[in-house]
Image (tube, rainbow, N blue to C red; front, side):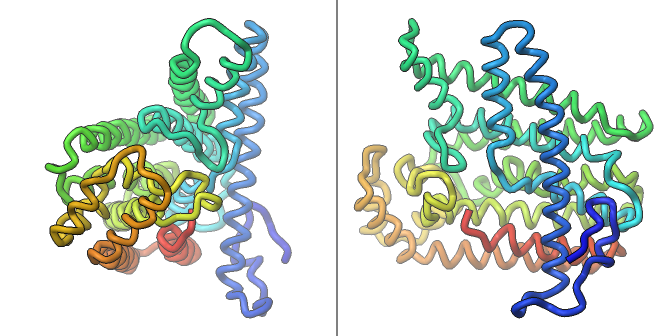
Length: 383
């Protein structure tokens, strides 16, 4: 299938007939989204090569530190945020405008994401991410292997915090390279800063909930989802893309807000399910940690609310040292309470609302098709 690349018109690359029953529009959208991901990864690789080289000139150890940060940026990931930002941009301008001027801004979102992930892993004491050791675990292991002085775990956590800090500075630097008029870029920056503040707010509420899980509510868990996940995964990237396109239509912004909030919350609810029932080989993270820690996700709060007294005793009796058979039994208890069915209905309701929002506004038809597909893909996933 011929492809014009990220600057081409997607409608020009749709095959006339499907292959092996594959829907041609969806096949073209998938191919086009891959082009955007490839373009974002290229921008990131070029930018990071220069930054790692510059830091390596200060000291060889600085170069090694920067290379570790680079590897966590480039080491996998679905590039969800740049994708939503691109389609938010494309929804405003259509397919005739070249995307190259805004590629640095799209790529900056991935640096922001790495900052959030690395810090989140320290706060959650997570050991794996994307199927590999988390940054603080990997750095601690190297510290121990080298026989250095001091506590290896403490050193790993300190370095991981610095990796996250470096990534958020890099994000600012890359965003500044976006080829837009200064007044427009300043407006883009306002939305970007709001996204960062909301991410911190959601993360704070998330760790606060773990200190008093029995008094946390479903509404508050959804508020965490709204700010920790919906805001910087879907809603703000979508609005970020619209801002990059200079969108000024209030109806479009309202529709994007509604779509982004609903899909983002559904995305987090899906994550809650994957945190208990996902395959670690696919998710890249261990399953059952939420059950071990009693983290107040909407899923587990609902399970406790719907549980019989015996089921609640089983759920409340979990501890951080629970073995795999015990975690598997508790996962079955959660299903038996009806909480999984309830969460799946909540996901469906949010996706329905998101798609209804797109029907209320004029938007580029190819972008509309992509956003419909992304809403489904974001919540019907295994990782």
